[in-house]
Amino acid sequence: MRQVYLDHQSATPLLPEAFEAMRPYFTEYYGNASSLHQHGLRVRDALKKARQQMAALIHAESEDEIFFTSDGTESANLAIKGVAYANERKGKHLVISATEHPSVVNSVEFLEKQGWTCTRVPVDREGRVDLKGLEAAITPQTVLVALHHVNHDIGTIQPVVEAGKICAKAGVPLYVDCEASAGWLPIDVREFGAALVSFSPHRFYGPKGVGVLYRNKRARIVSILHGGVQEGGRRAGTENIPAIVGAGVAAEVAARELPQWRAHTAVLQKRLWDGLSRDIPFIKLNGPIPGPDRVSTNINISTEFIEGEGQLLLCDLNGIAVASGSSCVSKSLKISHVLSAIGLDHALAQGNLILTLGKDNTEADMDYVVETFVRIVDKLRGMSPMWEEFERGVIDSVIAPRGFGKSFSEHAAAVSGKAAH
Image (cartoon, rainbow, N blue to C red):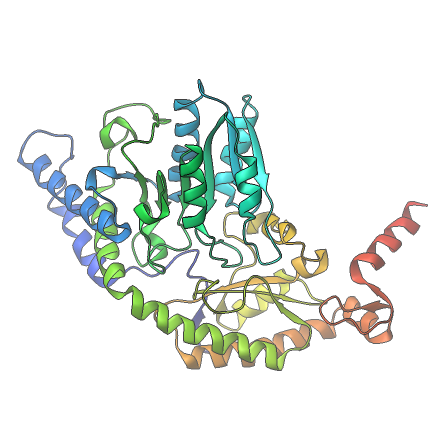
């Protein structure tokens, strides 16, 4: 059976050259970067080189603006809470979009319980933030605006440059979450006008266990993890040197190979969506069409009349690894807040899958996925009460209404109302 991995946003395989670079730091160069002897010095040199590699990837002015954390979630927590605590004398107001990653949303909710307030700016049907709404949301008490570069669910590329100009005019720092874009789209922190940027190398063939936070030297931030003076006193704890070394190599490779990776995945993305939309009726692409407004690695689909969990499990049984919602929330089986924010019908949100492409996928992989997924959909619809009711005319399609029956949501509400009485 063919094996096709389409969950690259959750994790990517480690580059062989990154693994080889890491190996000596487990066995030979095992010193602590804070130590003053030669073993510590050798490791500090490796740490410095990795900072330079990360700075080059995102066009930072200096390696001193790069901090290492344990992962993207910690970087987001440090960016949001660190800036909020450092600037609370100015105000206790935050601005985010309605479709941020759970690490951002939950950090904000934590602060709200402590007296901060937050304005959540709406997005359009493709997930693009309302820039006028963003500008209007900023007040004299606003201490941070947080906006992702690429949406983790639906692949929408946000107008971060324009958002940066709005924030600069208001004198408010902008934090950009680049978890879903680093290594796949060009990132220039100075062009963004960003005070802070975070990303995780394990999404572009680096190791897990290391995250990156860029901080412009003018941005005020305090530590949220207390202990030693590592990372310039901003993030206490012994650095994960092997992972940081591997991450630096991955960043260097990504900076060099990004145009090729991007072009390759764009061809695959179009081939995959063209095949799925051609061969499967009542299927919807969530987010922008493949092109300049969508990252080339992401396909987010809703297949009507069946649920995402069953699709995921049958894909796995057929050797296809996909996701049903963000890996950070998929275990909860809740509908994605991103899909709710773009106004997607509840039933379509339940039938949602995310397929994320990588540099090693092939056109033959895409053809196999299309061919296999057609069979999976046919099987699941054959067992679906919703599909049976649709064929009998009891409910209608949301994706392509035929003008009879009710939508599934209306039908479910009616059934629920009868049960209540």
